[in-house]
Length: 394
Image (cartoon, rainbow, N blue to C red):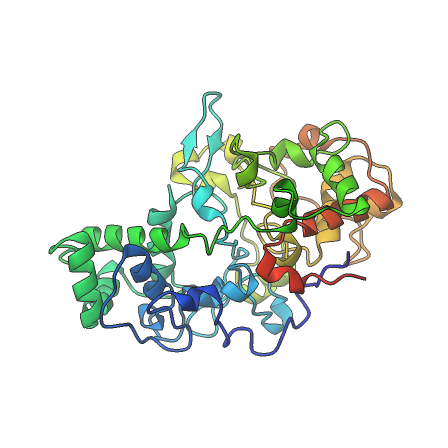
């Protein structure tokens, strides 16, 4: 299977035509900030908030802007030289420094905690600094390079502008729901989390899921990729992307732990966003894990919809899924492709953070070209059914 690269136009007007599942929720209108007079449930309220551009400083950007239902809740905008690696802020100029992660299946990530071995697990954002989905929901609103609201009080004032929100928050969260910033933000987060916990975000209807239920059959190449993926003696994939849950029918393909894979700096983005010379220390920037042993570690992402949600890695430094696989395989020294980044033709750049690189975790027998193709074929079967048309077949 060939995978559509994020540098190609998927279809015209993808940012404007946000019409799929989100728009089935009352009030979730990506093209305008109209809100229904009556909002029945917390999930309905979350859908309206998710699509409301009035919650950005310029009143021109919403959650959908960076988490479009047309592209598995990631950012479809290429932004020219940015090549989709990071997102643009509500002012039309500011650029972020990390790739917008998918919100698909995010509700299945556990709250940030340390497991019995003292290892950090879960949480939201690439560094887990938001404990859970409700806490994460409000952060982009007051981030100056995202939705740009000056403070939480300004967000609450925008909510109070709308009679439908006043009625909905009061009915769903109590009469004092919008009385102060803390209460309002907590209610806002719970509403967004209710929406993002719906089946719309986690349908479990990919070809892989259908095959588990006996509703589809993997091709020989896809099956070979599946066997390779889950064989920890032959690949390192399942060491990090194994089941978070014992329920094989609700596989997230992430253990939600944190590792430093030696990802290089995205110098292209840093040359555009004004952050040249800075270092992203990942987990170490999470106040709950601010130690040197956390430097350079980032949360293992879900592989759900991975075939269509590039660019890859926390900073979007790789455009193609094949490149990301070769990068993971670079420690194994088998195939000649591993010596160079196929996108640049140059040797792999050094890690942005050299400490704590998980060399032992990534070491496994080298992959041959047929195995790489099989892995890509299998990973493509993790695409939700409504996005399967975005994966091209040679």
